[in-house]
Amino acid sequence: MSNPMFEMRLYLLQRLTAILMLPMVIGHLATILYATRSELTAASILERTQSSPWLVVFYTAFVVLVSIHAPLGLRKIMGEWLRFSPKLANRISVLLCLGFLGLGLRGVWALTGAAMP
Amino acid sequence: MTGFRINLSYLAFMLHRCSGLALVCFLPFHFLVLGLGLEDAAALDEMLVFTQQPLVKFGEWVLVVLFSLHLLLGLRVLVMEWAPWPHQGGLRSGWVILAGLIALALGWLFLDGVIS
Amino acid sequence: MPHLTVRIWRGADEGEYQSFSVPMRENQTVLDVVSEVQRSQDQSLSYRFACRVGVCGSCAMMVNGKPRWTCRTHIRSLKSGVVTIAPLRNMPRIKDLVTDMSGFIDKWGKAGNVFESERDRRDAPVAVDPSSPRRKAADAAIECINCGVCHAACDVVSWNDSYLGPAALNRAWSLVNDERHSRKKETMAAAMGDGGCGNCHSQGNCMAACPIGLSPTRSIAGLKKMSLMSLLGGSDV
Image 1: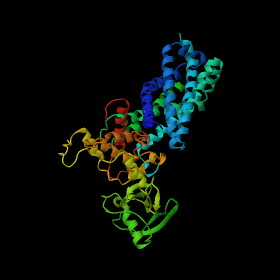
Image 2 (image 1 turned 90 degrees about the vertical axis):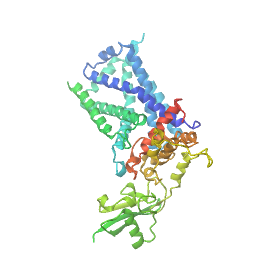
Image 3 (image 1 turned 135 degrees about the horizontal axis):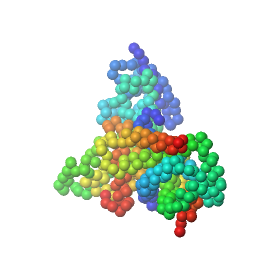
Image 4 (image 1 turned 120 degrees about the vertical axis):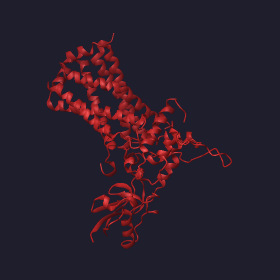
């Protein structure tokens, strides 16, 4: 790595995304527990999710954060358990990040798109 | 886990890493299912019927427990790294057991909601 | 007299366990057993020791899979009729129970762990307040005698060749908290480098294994916090 603090910066990014996601994970857990107690059909879900622009903001931010946080964790596993070279682990992590971002934002759009003005 | 690895902090590391790994494997499927709503609601409905099967519900329960566990063990890591240590041996081992119990309690809340 | 079965690693990285039968005695450490085998059964057995009383730290080996000071490990406390003794983990093996510790020592150097002072003998000694938080932090870490037990216990060391390890980082922590040390920036830069403190997963193996109850995990957590402060543009070291 050209930057001697590269590893440390990623470590910091991992912790910062974790802190930001703490309230979000609690919110998502609450949503899950609420959802099990309510009607689960496409129509009813879409009705609930499309009623609030705040859900768009919440879940967009959640997808962005998890798309950073998860590949950083996988990067460590690839290095430590699979013994991938740093270069390979970095490349795969970037691809995973982009993949999660694409799929995740598409999912958020599918559920809440109509809530956007 | 043999010899020197028998300590709650190591168990916490393993649970944290493996729960994270399991969650990240589930993530793309979760996103894809949400994306179904984009094409047509019927496909999402079909998927929702599929998730009513007991085995799928069991899988969801596992995910809820792992999700809670990953959150709580992550919180422990953050506190260990950034808050002052109470004393020399302060690995906050009790938190590991507490995290497990809270995760199971949340899993029970999930099951309770599914069954009722 | 009842006998004890001892399985001792013979060879280098390639090798195998050899079994010996040793008389069981009232008071007997693992080091006593290794010495007895070497003196009365196989003089070609190689192992390291010096003080025999838990001061020097040179007799560390894997005893039943756990890194320990063999001189401070009583056979009785193992509660096992078979004792397996191997060279320390995470280090290349030279012969039998002797490891090549140069990689471990080199990591101490890489962690910027040489004390340097800008003062010389003409200057008055620095007045260090023993009750200051920084001195207390340094004191908590300073008793390390470099035996390598925590390095052998750490899984991250075995998974990541560049990781400096608990002993080297614990030493770095005592130095960055030493107000007389003049190269704190260099020490901190190494602790924040690719093999530095961010690699530690707080598994706690080092703490569980340390024969004198030190807490490298805590020292590394201190380094992590200091690194973040410095990366976020906060306090200088």
